[in-house]
Picture 1 (cartoon, rainbow, N blue to C red):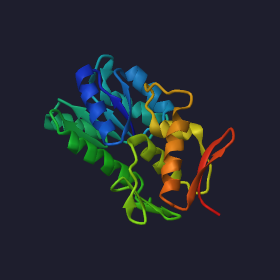
Picture 2 (cartoon, helix red, strand yellow; picture 1 turned 60 degrees about the horizontal axis):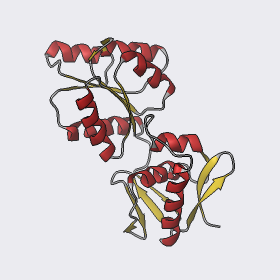
Picture 3 (cartoon, one colour; picture 1 turned 90 degrees about the horizontal axis):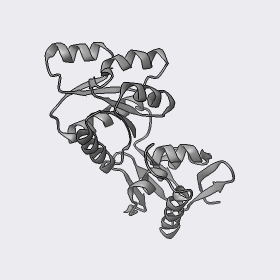
Length: 224
């Protein structure tokens, strides 16, 4: 999942970003409504985590502006404003969920994943291509029931490719799935992840290949 985190308190934002990235989320961060609105409109986020008290206004005011621009990304309001009226007002303003600070990051992760499942209820939990099975619930790649040892970014590449077996996936799509906007990306960083992933798949005898498509991107397909 790619998350837009809108939080102006640096320490809180850093803690949340680190915790979410440890759970394989890609996190873009904004500290103001103005920047967040631009990022939400041009990005491909799966969810928005939104603080209410921001330097340039009430966080909830962002929701109707996004909806008016046909941005329907689900929003979790994350705030110290804990009264019943605050929570009801947040949900009535368009938030899909409302969490009160302090909170457990484990609960935030669970709620984000629940929102994602709600969006993609028709999407399979397991996909098989060749002899490789990817389990999206356990975030695990298996060949003949043996797990592959994949670091976070290799796993994110595989998740993106295996959802589109036999179809080319644009390089930009892969980069958006793997990197946050403020990540420093070397010119061949994505290619290095794919090269290591390709070697592990081949060594495991998965019966599939990751093929480069010139000037477009990559595709994952069963070996002929």
